[in-house]
Length: 226
Image (cartoon, rainbow, N blue to C red):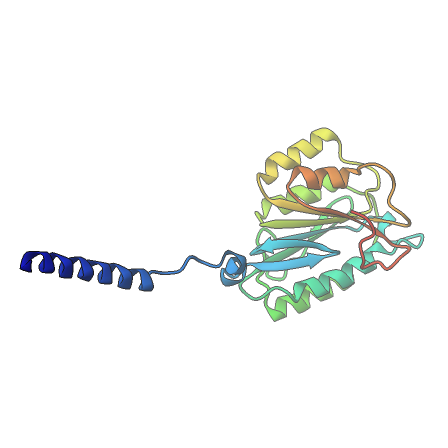
């Protein structure tokens, strides 16, 4: 009987130790809060949301983006200034305006790098935006290649999808170069969205991004159709 009692006490002791360890074991991480805890930024632009540490904003500033009542470039400037405020100094960003060739925001004299989102760089970016005007032709591919070379997490591309359009071979080349970079596309127009997919929508879909159409005859900061 004494032996049975000893065995029973030993078993109870083992159960108590196991229960104590279970009570202090670490809880699984809250996956919904992971992006915030890891310091990733959420940037919203014309209803599209990008998440990461490094962002590049690519803006078409060709003549068609500014004339004939198509004031897309004005809407872009206002929207970007608001979006930059969601970034903290641990995040990086870059702005690429383009017509026949890209023109990059370059506060430190190093165009191949992304500036950190300090308050000073945000104010410099606002002044850079104000200096941009719409004129000239368009080379979409050169600007997108410039953005991809910066190795961001997310690219936001804004254009009115005017000529010359990206060819399927060019879109394939962009997809191969991007190699997993998320590319969102915002298309501007003077009225309701035309039927069918534009090359902006196709490029965004091929690169894991979202697409939105902004009708400039309505509120320019509200997307009309996806």
